[in-house]
Length: 349
Ligand code: 2P0
Image 1 (cartoon, rainbow, N blue to C red):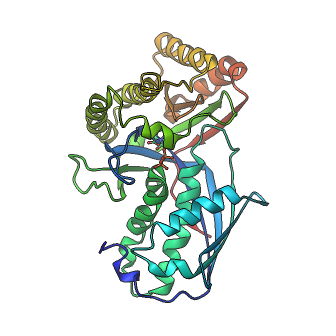
Image 2: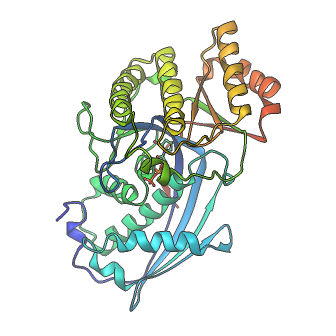
Image 3: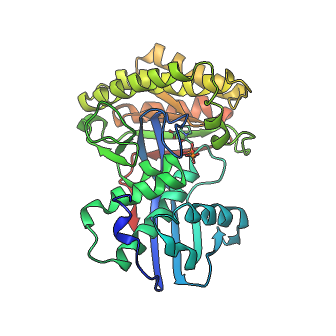
């Protein structure tokens, strides 16, 4: 029996309501490829966002069978309700009583769908936090100091990237040479004060829903010619990323950020069933960022999620000049610009 959920196995559900707000995150070292059920093929590292978050209210009550309803931005959403239903069913070995629950969810995001900001990370971590809150309500003697580890574990089962959203600042997930890292849940990472708060300005180059989901993208790593090389590269980039974050080396960090973003998309382009999420305007924006950096020597770097939208990462020291550059040189490439930065993590409302 899993030590995380073991204490909650034999309990009877009673009514409870919980509201949590949880942020999205941007991976600096990417999780792309799984080994087994929600086990990452390599360690990943991400930064929590501040403005881009999901707020979720969940009402749990006893019922004769598992019933889930979900309202997203005021509209019933059967597709997401089904996803949560399947997720809860997957916990049945550890928490058999979930089959006797009514689960009513109301959820909303501060950021638009299709903005290149992972709503599964914020949405599923927010739900997992309400579920963890429920477990602690049902068993009030559970150890408070591992509340967020449990929330991260429960988030990971729902969506890998979500397990990194339960901590503010930076977090790491996946077995690595760094002590205390594990495939089971994410842990927070302390970094140099120079890098503890960075800007992340998102150029929304296309808000159209992508035609290949991340779930499918992970699957395409299974028989990918470069899979093992990619996992080796990610492990090396993870170590380098941790050491640049700890030493405050922004230039070193920026090089890794861009290498990781480009490797992620290279994996899509070279998979046995290739696909491309980058758009011509993504490439134009990347070239403009590289030109700006060459000409000014100002530390402006990019990252990409699994989509065409560019995350621009930079310290506050050059914020004024970079914001001016973004507004004057990159606006014409984007449908919308979202100014975000490092966040403090989730909050119970
Ligand atoms: C990441 N992404 O590390 C990488 C980089 C997208 C690009 O994790 O199947 O939605 O739910 O575990 O977490 C997106 O995949 O996949 C992702 P599941 P998830 O953030």
